[in-house]
Image (cartoon, rainbow, N blue to C red; front, side):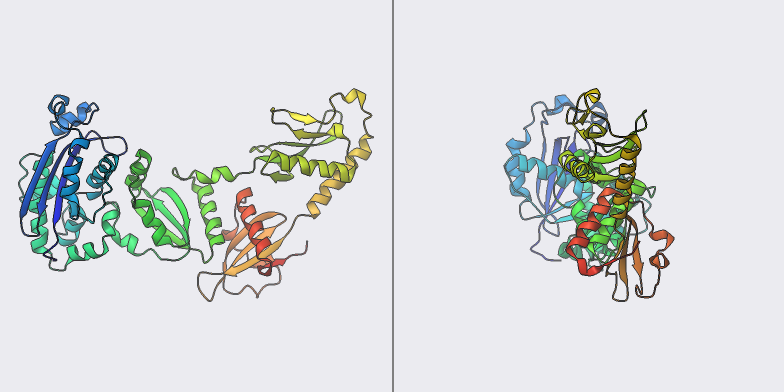
Amino acid sequence: MNKQKHFALVDIETTGSHAGGAKITEVAILIHNGKKVIERYHTLINPDVHIPYAIQTLTGISNEMVEDAPRFEEIAEDIFHLLQGKVFVAHNVNFDYSFLNKELKQSGYDWQAQKLCTVRLSRKILPGHRSYSLGNLCRALDIEITDRHRAMGDVEATVKLFDLLLAQDDEGHIQKSLQVNTAHRLPTHIPKEQFDKLPETTGVYILRNQKGKIVYVGKALNIKKRVFSHFSGNNSSLRRQQFINEVCHIDFEESGTELMALLMECQLIKKHWPIYNNALKKYEPKFVLFNYQDICGFEHLAITKSTAGVQGLQYFETAGEANIFLAKLMQEHQLSPSLCNYYSPGGKDKVLVTNKDEVEMPNLEDHNQTIYTLLEHLRLQQRSFILTDAGRHDEEQSYIYFKEEKLFAFGFIDDLNDWTEVEDIVSYKDKCISNHYMQTLVLRYAETNPEKVRMLQK
């Protein structure tokens, strides 16, 4: 142990469970030089908000007790100087650290520190206990807590636990933690071994809750680095705290390329709809070209907003793009404007003429045959190709099968040259539920990497 290293053992009481929406009501700090406590600090704090009754019952700190106590900004300078340059130590360290970091930042102090968590250290140095909560662990170790759920009482017990950890740390876990200090930025309920197994390669990561349900899926060029970023930083919002508390298990799948990672991510999200994945919804197409037949038997072409119930001929990001495409079809095939509907921002389809009685309608059979020919023309323009790229290792390749303008399958195979029909290489597990976002990803990549594309005959 570095004899020059000083530790700030800390405990706080608060008005709630997350730093984004709660305030500190009490803080106790004991400065430890690696052998003994050399300085003590303790104060109640006026949070300027009502303390919930359940919290008052748990801690014994009432609104009346903090009424004349200093506000945090009045003592921020003292706390900053006490903590500055020290290793921050607490039982479940991220809780105390997040509150103090937020309050100090709001008071104008830019503070960061190395962290040690006595929960994680206890699991390594004192294995085999059924529970590592401060109360249960101290009871099992015969460490007396004189004033439970008060800052000074809990931090004094934490110091006794820390002294025991220092004395029994035969394998140097504390020093290793100080050198790496990664584990203490991860939630205590996620085993560090799971993080250690994560590769620094491209792929997807899957975060699960205690019951094994997927709560988030992400893609990354460096899986380990990206997963770690979810738990680092000082974002103290309620949603982020709920997210961190819910994640209990981390899985991953390597992908070889970023494009495959994006497709795998989207497929997993569409299959499981994790509660913390919202971003992909904005990539759905906004407008669609479709055809329908009116009560007189005339076939119409129309642009409308894309919905789940509309089977489209073509999809578009903007109304302008869609309307231009329809105008081009009308010109090329000399379609009657009375039978083509543009999209109007006002919420109704806009027909080029307002009174059909004033327009000479085309012959029904001739018009419908023109539409059928046009639809067949659009169908024949649909592309089919296979795109090959790097795999997850040198002996493997990734493939993407694009069939008739839709993503049909993607996966990995050892030898992409050993086939006569493309369907021969497609495993049932590689077939996918295509959507506009995934198709757009593939088409854009194919356009910029034509050397990786092999067009297929219809």
